Image 1 (cartoon, rainbow, N blue to C red):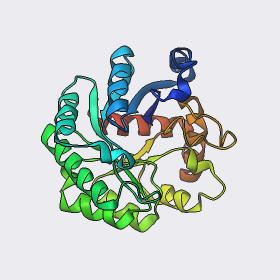
Image 2: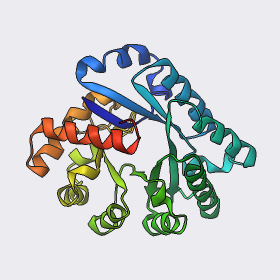
Image 3: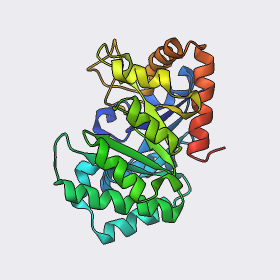
Length: 255
């Protein structure tokens, strides 16, 4: 069964048909989903969703663009959420310099603090890194985040950066972008990396694969990403599904 390692089903984009959509995932070959927190509010709704559906797990964390809301009290609350039985990661956390908001020093501070949280609670991290390759790598190395392990979600850099993460034992998250015409760099990364470090993800409702680009994304479109990986790696689609599910269970410690 396909394992969607990064979704946002608590998003308002699913407000009208969430129950119907989630009820149909198993029949479509989607076995497990990890819903990812991106703010204090969405961490709360993510955990509620995970506690409602047996096949959904949760990640608790605050996206870099939302880190201005963080303080010590909210960090304590996040630590409590990490102790919930269905919380399997701290995320999504990281750096986003595309919008440069809040200011970079704020993002860096709370990225470090959330890595330290993951190390304390012994959970892997889900890392968001956009236009911030060097600073993300530097902080991950300085904070010894490899001891927590985790995934670089929606991986968007080249082979050289990929090599550094793979050498540290991180997984790389691959989704709909792999099917885009301008995804040459990501296709090179997928061709280069070993299959035992690749994770499938949607980032839904965002990043729908071709031919659905621009539409609302969901786990139902992941077979298109499976097909793309299969073609690049020259292995059967069933092998892609089996390997990525095993990888996800290993990383999220659901084995």
